[in-house]
Image 1 (tube, rainbow, N blue to C red):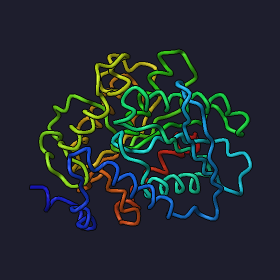
Image 2 (cartoon, one colour):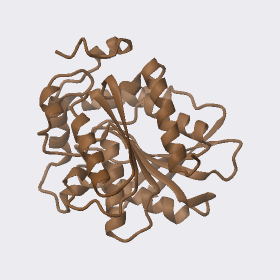
Image 3 (cartoon, helix red, strand yellow):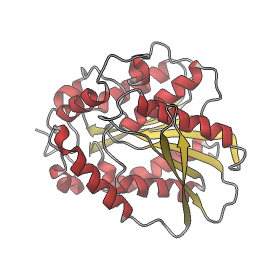
Image 4 (spheres, rainbow, N blue to C red):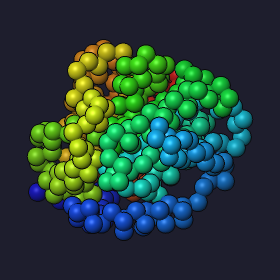
Length: 309
């Protein structure tokens, strides 16, 4: 039903899909780790890693990308990559992180939070919250303006980013200047029209979404459900403005739009980007015409978030 709707440059992505079985996770993660290691760092950027101690005394790895020509970047994007809560970073995550750093002259920090099924909710959330605490505590030492800190993520990383802003608000902590959400997960109920329509689409489908939630939410949560599924929040007051990007042929499309509307209805500035004929994860094809077109849109959103335009 959807094959003729997909942007023509993405025909090869029709074959990029996973069986909805946890048995494939070790193979997928081994492959992703290898491919990411083979992705070179741009010679215009420095790359270094920092390890934080988590709330339960484990280690969280942060990867920092910064233009070599800038000693004090002032601006920072703290980024939680899309993983469906069970997949490691992919090569395109590194490419986009480097692009954001290079094109906006900002520090970009990518968080390697722990993954399900070994580490279900709330561990990934707490890892990301801990990374946000580290960033605010070390902003001055890193040469950052605390008013130019942005949090973002794609897919499940978008849910983590939105949830971290909610926790920071709920605890009365300094919060991010803006949210940068790329086709975000926001709702565990899976009752939207797009979730019903795109049951078996390439790359991401309702079936995979069901597996994701079953691995992430293994037990009744010991904390508020909204920190896993931000659309289940009751009050959207006092949250940062947002850039929300959604793909047309994506089961997550409508929950992204609903989250954007919830922010807008509560008086927050929201920039919604609707990517026509695009699958979830369309930007895996980094050099495609559509990904490059929306790269400009993303960079403009980041510059606005940093107070530059």
